[in-house]
Length: 322
Picture 1 (cartoon, one colour):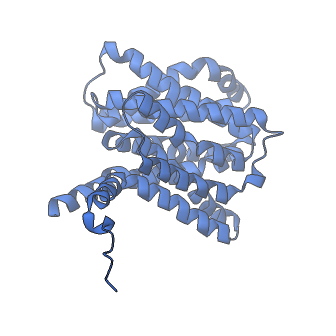
Picture 2 (cartoon, rainbow, N blue to C red):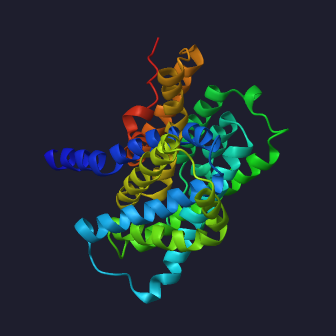
């Protein structure tokens, strides 16, 4: 019993708490991105996120987490991880957010667990179970309650919505494919080299905006939003996410994305003074319920199996003689 409790505590410390932190940090990213776009080109923000992230991760890696270099035979693996999880994912996300509404972004990003579960099943890393389907359905219902179907504007924001859908699909591939390298290298090694490769891949996209900002300097006081995006919207969430991926299935890690709309509402209440409505409470219960079901999938499955085999639960009442 004590051994089981220790395992549960370790799972919460090494997987679930980092995942909750990831969703809290990512939930604020669209708002800060919108603020940054008032002054900076989305491609420049991409350069700051990936270039700055690569520099920070490399310095920390050399100082505190060094465990050798990666093997040459894995260069292509890291190239693909960087392309899907950093380069194209962030490029499509930032360009999509710039072309659509935050409401649309919330609901589209929430489709990542669906893509991830399907992909991980096709690659035989995971399997779809009735409990997982139920958990995703419950959590996704919560997302729709929060945003409301009437607010999903597809008309004038079509290009932005398409970019966000592609971003979600590509990021799902990253979540699934990263498991292969995490079996070989430590989490900090993986995320460091992913960002280094990602930085090299984004140079052709970000070179002109970088030259432009050098020739047309922006006042120092306006650089706070890119700084927040770099530290709290990039370095910390990517680091926490890779730790969680080491100890949990990619489909479970992806399912925690459903917490982002919930945190988005809370952040809006604190920063913008928006009121808490009944639908927010209902949505919060559904989202948290879905994530809880998925995080306890094994126990729930075992409970259902034991219930099905328990003759007491299925015994028919004896007829009494009159």
